[in-house]
Amino acid sequence: MEDKLKDKLIEYWIKDKVITNKKLIEAFKKVPRENFVKKEFLDQAYYDTPLPTIKEQTISQPTTVMIMLQALSLKEGDKVLEIGTGSGYNSALISHIIGKKGTIYTIEIVSELVKFAKKNISKLKIKNVKIIHADGSQGYKEASPYNAIILTAGTPKIPQPLIEQLKNNGRLLAPVGPLYEQVMIKITKKGERLIKENLGPFVFVPLKGKYGY
Ligand code: SAH
Image (tube, rainbow, N blue to C red):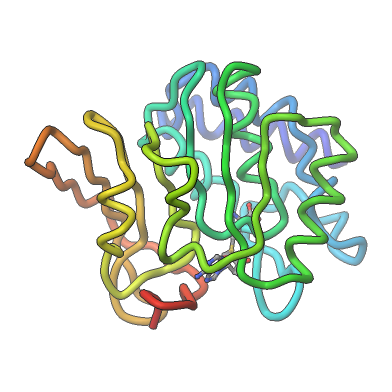
């Protein structure tokens, strides 16, 4: 049942050319989303919807995650920063794409979710995901600069520290806008210049912390 739904999602992405990056499809196949959802939602693990995790937070919708990861143009060996670890699912996908030489630092502000994500990630024996309990709206300067930064919570503005922590030619993705009606913004850093693209409307849970709502 679950496998059928998983295959259907993949079929839809390929047929409608939503996802053209093969590596991304491979990662989706390999990472069991069922490992990252709460027991009561196991039968919905491959529904194309967000699902509740803990404290009114969610694991994002599969299609949304895949669109964001595709736009990030991740390469093997990249160093990535994620703000909003949640269940850890997105980090697990990124971990597969960047490979053993890459590292992902992922920041979560809710301590219960830090625990939940650590448990989920360690079950899969993934080694290159570093989960940190902190306010990610300020980024994570200690390991900067990053090839790619991804915000998985909606933000009123792109926090300036995140731009500073991006490498030259680095990519940043963030849902930006008022509460519950963001547009996905992609920023590519070219020296002093920031190239901005709008990938369309999305809805995310709100970013907390210093640069949040
Ligand atoms: N990427 C997650 C989904 C994230 S939902 C997954 O794959 O499951 C957004 C998450 O951002 C929530 O877990 C929320 O607690 C967290 N969050 C909100 N504000 C934050 C902040 N300032 N720093 C770090 N995490 C934050």
